[in-house]
Image 1: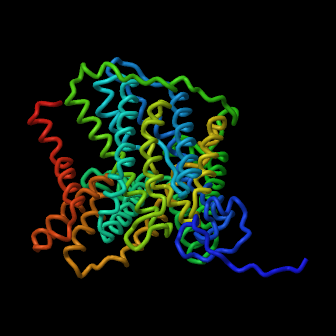
Image 2: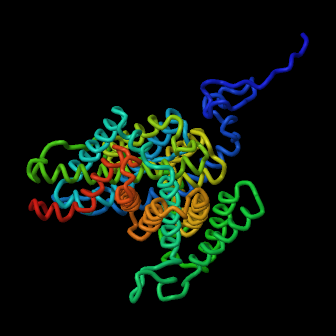
Image 3: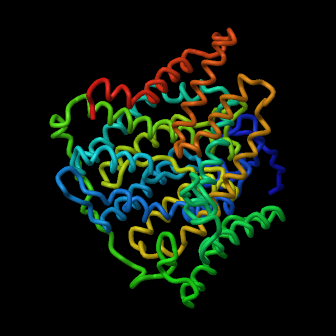
Length: 485
């Protein structure tokens, strides 16, 4: 046979209309759009592993947050919580990879878990609290099906979307500095360097060393810089711990060492323990406010994260819109219900997905890799303790620095743009809340535009968002006025 040359062709199912891609690609490449998104199999695997390593702390942190007593005085078994956390993260992340086909990983939302532990279980049992997760997940899915959630996301101006990305960058950088012990809550000041104005202990020095190593590798354009830094930092941590240089109590979230066997059987005793009854004892108003709070926590945190990570991955167009956004939003909403049924709190998109994107991940294949690693943790839970929190925190700071580069897209000379972006960026870390930053940006944008006589530029959905966020900021006074405690 005479060999014929094959011209590059454009396929309708590939992300990025008009992208010229070679014919004869593998089914894996075609399904996940690896080539048209400028990625490779190695980058996707590396990105998926990096995202998992940056998120693995959730397997220890979420059970810690949900360790309190409910209104009946009952607590949840820690091993069962770890199983529920790993199972729900694996299932939702695999769904995001296989159906949504974007590099977004999901796990138990810390904001949602925080609401459950601090506001819900003092008034309800744990099964009833998980039922609330199912309800708020169903509400978000309804918003997606009706198209309202995507319309809301697309209605946000591009400058605010860049502000959201930058704000998340500062937010996760602060999280990284705080979790590493580099930044502490001060006594005379809100925060301070170390516990008393100076760094203390080997673990925080390991964080600083890992952070510098990753920055140096990135500056030298070394592929896999973040993953290489995490691996190197983990090896050094294990050596420091094994030789006794660092005592086990000095590590923030447990020593980087195996305790007993590396293999353990999962405990699914919490699965399906959901109660939709008994809410009458707390009143319809309280239930409504709890659902509203959970929807806000799950809706806007995920919205901001998807915008930020999608922009960083180059998946968003000039207006900040992503291909397949509705699928990703639906899966994120379903994560609330899945997490409630599993008994591990509502699942949401994690900002740590940006670490994988920083390693080159651009498709859902990276999420599949992350999901499979979470699934493996069902049987290898002890291995999650090998990556110390101090090392994983360095990756968060690096990604925060990368996300701040979006500042170049903002017209800082236009006050109507610069002020809302500024408030969005600074209030996320200052209030330790993504939702608060988004809310401040939206409200200030609308008010300033209206004050300039440019109300027509705002749009109906931005007016609606402004009204919602005004309720959000006034929620506590409204509760007091209504007599709700």
